[in-house]
Image 1 (cartoon, rainbow, N blue to C red):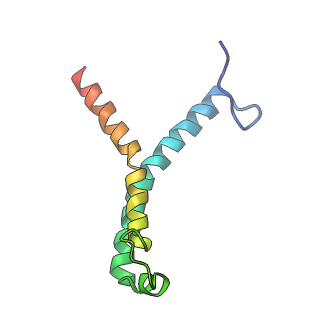
Image 2: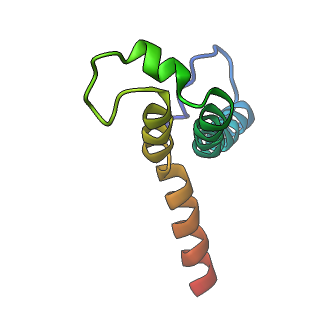
Image 3: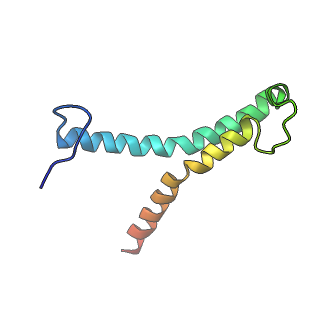
Length: 92
């Protein structure tokens, strides 16, 4: 059986496991971070930058707030995976 491949030469199984654990937590941090950025953009900026930068745009997806909300939705898979794992563990 072969060991895990790592970008860092000489990384042992413990280092690879730690990197995977850190990557999982970073993935979980992305969704709330983007949601908070969208809320702060609405509250602080009030859409002023969107009006300046989006002159002539008719798209509902133009601007920073929709972009942050879309990024939050795209990164939600980590949360969905966590909920599914916990639900599966609770059934055992």
